[in-house]
Image (tube, rainbow, N blue to C red):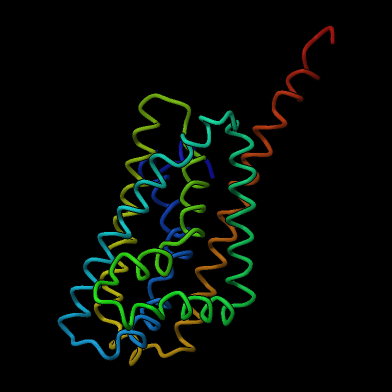
Length: 231
């Protein structure tokens, strides 16, 4: 899914690439159910304040990962094609684990969030890092950024779409955590698991597409060399 080739334009194309992937890996709905359990002894005002702070911190983590992550890797001499292949594999593997074993992921999330019940200010650690936007989310964001155009206006359009997706995901975190009790009453654990699996399938599709683009990047020089007359 090359955002520059989508008929909706670079900004919308990048948004459509990033939002399903980021929403799936962050999983605000499923995380909100755990947030409600861990924060059960806090007052409503405290939980609302924590939800707002976690949403803001999550946005910061996502933006730094999207804007700077792939450039840091390129600094070490990693080609864009290799970055896309590795990123696609990471996204696909994370999606497969979410799709096939959501119970394991939920248990791991509960362990990550457990220290928050006793912490005075748990907004950044552990509720943002690693509970909401942990290493998996950061790796997915870097993989998404690897699909960027080389340069020009398309590059800015791409990052504008990615930024919009990050903002909407962070807003979803804030709303879901703030309304965690209502979500529990509306969906319950089984309903949240269904949403998680649907989102994980979309994430798997995104990972396969990024991987496909990376393989094309790596193989393109070989095909061009073979097609050159006189070779």
